[in-house]
Length: 90
Image (cartoon, rainbow, N blue to C red):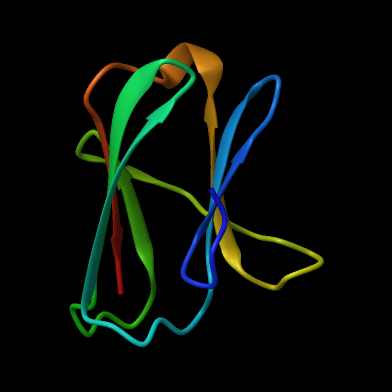
């Protein structure tokens, strides 16, 4: 799945979630299957100073993609679970 709102890049080792610095909406909800697991990705504009990522309630450190300049997180195959919830808060 790829759009101008977010990207989910599936690799042999896991998945990379990439979101642009600016999103023209207050919230997004994406429900999809990744590697045979049901995954929910939620975005909410909260007025935070810095974007935060949560995977199953645990805050994850993000990296900046060298090419796009977007913030990304990588989730290893071993960490992908059924009914996974990924939250992106701005």
